[in-house]
Image (cartoon, rainbow, N blue to C red; front, side):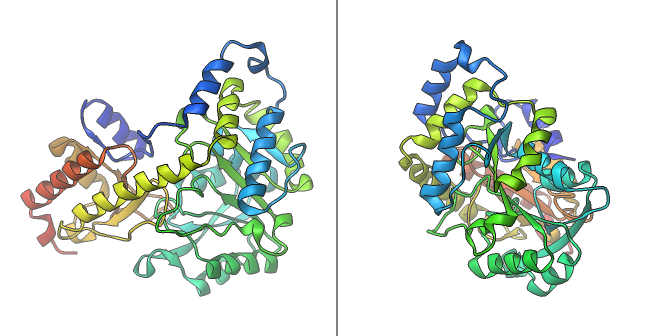
Amino acid sequence: MTMADMAELADASPGSYRLENADSNWPPPAAAIKATKDAVGLDRYNSYLPLHGLPELRKAIADRYQADLGLRYDPDGEVLVTAATGEAMLDVLLSYINEGDRVLMTNPTYNGMAQRVRLAGGVQVFTNQVEAQGWHLDIADFRKAARGCRVIFYGSPSMPTGVVFDTKETKLIVEVAIENDALVIFNGAVDKLVFDGKQVANPATLPGMRDRTIICGSVTKNYNMIGWRIGWAVGPRELLKPVHDVHIFNGIMASGFAEAGATAALTGDQRYLDETVKAFQRRRDVLAAELNKIPGIRFVLPDGGYFFIANISAFGVPAGEFCRNLLEEEDVAITPMNAWGADDFGDHHVRFIFTNESENRLVQAANRIGAFVKRHSLARSPA
């Protein structure tokens, strides 16, 4: 029972509560919508060229990193526009991973990261995020697991836990990367959606790390522009040069008129992000408060992103069965976390998305989950 399976089942049930897929019903920036519409049909935005992205978008991406993080990248050669973060990550992995190379990831991690390592021929190596410690890293295990790894591949906020790795953890990642002469691929797909005043420590900002870090990002989640499919890889010229070549034969180009919309989002009024974060934090808090009333569900409140995961081991049923029966009986779709990380992870964890329903519907969904648990007396099942 995968995320796609749950989405198909929920699609077949109109009006169901959609807490399974990392979608958002929050509107994209108005300026991005207008710029996209204005670009449709114009010859400039209906071309293969330039394959590495329109110059104004590459400049907008570079300017955003300089304004937000103080990181300087040359739009000509150090910024590559891709078809969302997923293509960027695969392009980088294909550029730097040979068959059998070891890639260190967290357990759990975004399934799309783990499977792309396999597509590139890499060997998945996992280091645990410790649930009892708020899904933070096990420092000793991280150092041990990283030995001999060619790449350290992670994101913050981390998918699917929503944890933001603190400065101490980021310094650990940096130290270990230098010790092992490893490339760091940083998934920054949700690095602007951070709650409770926390901040993401981007590894490229730490001493010596700009030269060994490639950042993959997008407007997909940060700006709620899921359908635009615009992302990027950013890094030093020499590191990014082979990624350009892979992109040409893998993604070819990103959508021209979608690039116009992405440019508008990145150059427009960034107060949009403040309003988005406030709205999503309220939704997170509403759903969390209601789920906390249900005996047997344990979770760590996420620091950021669209998502968090809950431990349902107290119910004594596999995550896939729990999710399938919940949808059939209560019209609430959530996702089992099987193989979101190591292959043996996730049979007792489920994921909740809190960005695709209103606060009222999140309350209703949680009430339905509570009724489902009570009806089946799941909370009294052995752990």
